[in-house]
Every structure is written in C-alpha cells, then in structure tokens.
Length: 124
Image (tube, rainbow, N blue to C red):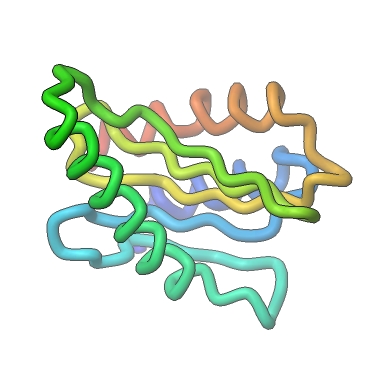
C-alpha cells in the first residue's frame, strides 16, 4: 500500500472518534486500494463492494431524472453506526467510512474526512 494511503488510514484511525472501518475504492473496477477495520467481524472490503452498488444506483437515478449533478457523498444512518460514502470530485473512487454513532460527532467526522481526503485526492 502506498505511503499516502497508509498515512490516510492512520490519520482516520487515530483522529476520528468512534472509528470502525475505512476503505478507498475505485468506482470503475471495484478494486479496493486500501482498507482497515478495528473490528475483526467487520469486513470493510465486503462493505465497500456493496457500497459501490449504492453509488452506481444513485448515479443511475440521477441520470434517469435528467439531473445535471454529481454524487458528492452518501450517508447511511444505522441504529448504532453511521456510514459515509464520499465520492471523489472526478467520480473515479470513493472513500467509505463507518463509525460508531454513540461515539462519533457527525460534523467532526465529516470535517476530518474532508481534511484527510485532500492527500488521497492529490495522489490518486
């Protein structure tokens, strides 16, 4: 794994309260460039593969509606977790982040993800 991806994962793990898992995935191929999970039973690459289908479905819906927009992010709130799918500006990859909703602050989580995403964006 590239140094900038290792650093990205380390920054997320260390600084995002309630961190559970993160991936960086290419949209066209579904290849996961990087992944990590704090929970042994939580497979981030499987989650990322399913979330790729969510991104594709939303893109199809936007196209069907004739909208001139792109997906920026998708947030899924579960009973005990928050999942954020943050699509790159060029639409070529996405970052998937799962956090424990009892420990996370949504505003802080999104701000930190945006901050740490800058290096990933610059290097992918």
